[in-house]
Length: 360
Image (cartoon, rainbow, N blue to C red):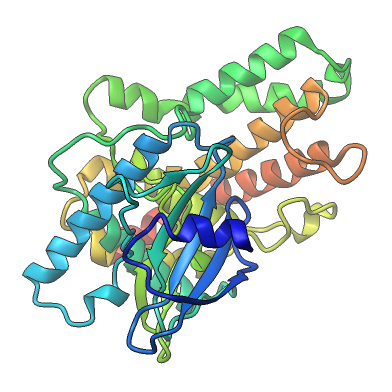
């Protein structure tokens, strides 16, 4: 803990420290709660940033500063109360940057938001709130005056993911191609249609916007009354298609099975979750969405399970070099589960379109 105290001292705004304890949530970064002695002073969150995943820390923190600063200004303009609970604030270190490098790792400190909680449960109610909040998040950032950096290049680029799969197929490093050729063929059959977002972007018909790119219920903070305070986990905030926030949420939330479900009969697309999320999202994002973006929201719901199936399949063919696996064939099980979810979502597209038309 002595080392942690030395790191905390690099952030002069933090007062006298009473205790530092590990927080269990968060899969990517190591996170600690820093409690201060003075009851009048805030507590803080200390985080070690995973620089294996986020390799450009300057860009990462700059993106976050631009986004939180812009949201804070909007809230002030709207005369919102309790603003410090409605947007994250990161402290400057002694050199003025919002992170500190200790020679081995990168650290940052944000103000802890008191009387807040995260929810894990996905219900129609929490999905509606998530749609409302992530749509509002995008709407607030629709007029950010500067271009943000792409913190993970090609993260949700379907053409790039197909290129990775085709390279895996051509190399066949683990000699597994023959057992999955039928899935490869099925995926290739729809590849042209599923890569349409990149094509429309090149033709100037589809914009990129600032998106969260990791939309899940657990990435929002709620107050004691169950109202949403703010969006958290801003590491993946970057320019993307709005589909990144719409489709990625539904890929996990609207799946009635597990991501690696072995019994494919359990994998269905939950239309109640779709309707709740879409209703909230369109209510708050409608102000800036183009007709093309609205029309393609059902496409977004099919894109993300398709993309994830492609990624799992490429990794399986390569010999499981990227995703951690728990047993032989785990990536193939994941591929089949995600592909089944894609087919279920695809079958539901007419119903999705009708529902969205009704909302409008």
